[in-house]
Image 1 (cartoon, one colour):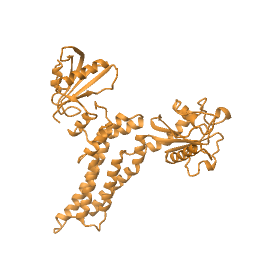
Image 2 (cartoon, rainbow, N blue to C red):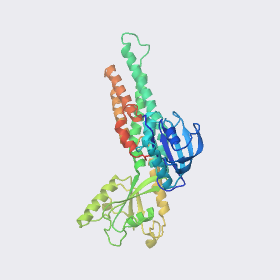
Image 3 (cartoon, rainbow, N blue to C red):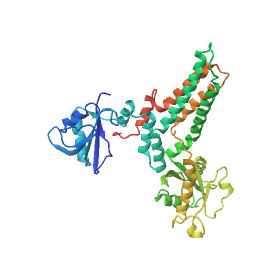
Length: 425
């Protein structure tokens, strides 16, 4: 990557501060073309920047990061400007006019960090998750991945599998000689340990993916049970139409929110009854389908009793008595807000147990790699299989795990990962 790239690294729009980042061999030359002087590496300097016609662009704070000591691993210059839309636009035009740098593509700075071994693929994914994080739980998980916990785990598995492979290879290379000890017990322990860890992560991947996408909580009940009113109260919005006429909600309405640090998507579903209207019938079928797929199901009822026919084939997690402002007693009221806080705490408590069980691997391609590695290890544990084939199975298991951290061919997945990044990242 011999060219130099630039982009706005902060958000678009008016702000107190804007940062333009340059990365590549001509970063310092671009600064000089704008009339600035680069400070020493890892230091800063205030410079008056001008365009090609001598017009002052801004008084900028300039930071200089030397090759090998920057985010991308390349020579990097950061221009800290006043966050005026006009200033930023003029500065970007002036940089492009130098002919020494081109506008960066989305995620290109991070791509360069990956290619220059400043990050591995798991850290790139973790960085993407940090940027996308909306809740505390998502942030904590993303920081674990970005901090290298996923890569460390894969490295340990690869080390153990490589050790087992070396022991098996020794029995092949020295087949005609006397091996000082039987390697089978150590190989067995190594493979059993890695296989157990892989299975544990595979089993937890669904919950981990849910944490990233958000847990679904379905509100189900008969028509006019107060589902739409409760949704609006929970989300402090008018997401759902509220009407005294039964059957108002025909399709599933989704509203995403943060419940005590946990990402939750509430689903307002059609009222369950024996409907005659064809459109309402479709809505009820969709309601039942989404309720079965949801992570948590809340059955809303005015009486507190749940008719068996209403929830046949559906696991009920919480029964919520609605309209307590009309009937008194325990329950929730979408009108007064009574009972809402305890309800949210109950939802958070149930989901917290599931959040506590999340692993590190949230992406589908990671699950596929883990299952592929586990399958090869299972074959390698078959003592009846020739040693050469057992060793080959372990080699393929190591390769499957290597794909997670990006040590082999990662081009097929980089486009997907970097498409979620802003241009300045």
